[in-house]
Image 1 (cartoon, rainbow, N blue to C red):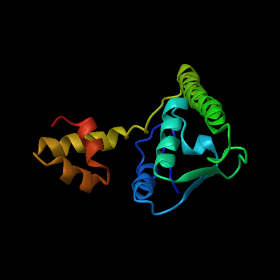
Image 2 (image 1 turned 135 degrees about the horizontal axis):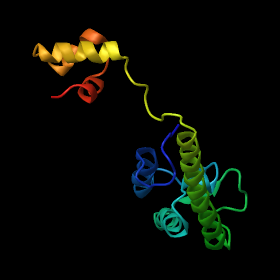
Image 3 (image 1 turned 180 degrees about the horizontal axis):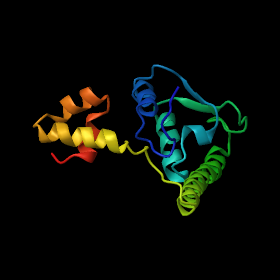
Length: 153
């Protein structure tokens, strides 16, 4: 199952079938819905689907019966649905940013939790002894990037 956003075509599991389609290893791409296939907008989505058709590979949406490469108004329907999917992605991003801003305005600190003063003090002391960030991380059971955040190189 792919966990990357459909907002970009630069997804490994999205690109792989195109290489197989080019070699005509299958006849049909079946996707759950167009917004799960791509949220990049009408033009990129149409380009992906047209490329499949040029290679002799059809497409079909499992949940949108009217979205089928054999349909007479396929490009019109794809354009409309792809535009809606792209707008939905923008709305999701805006809602996420608004929720984070609201939490920040309420005084909620965002990001990973801060290390205790005792851990920071131990890290600084070990660094003062000339220990490496890796050694400090292993000794204190924290990540090297956390060590780098609290001590000078």
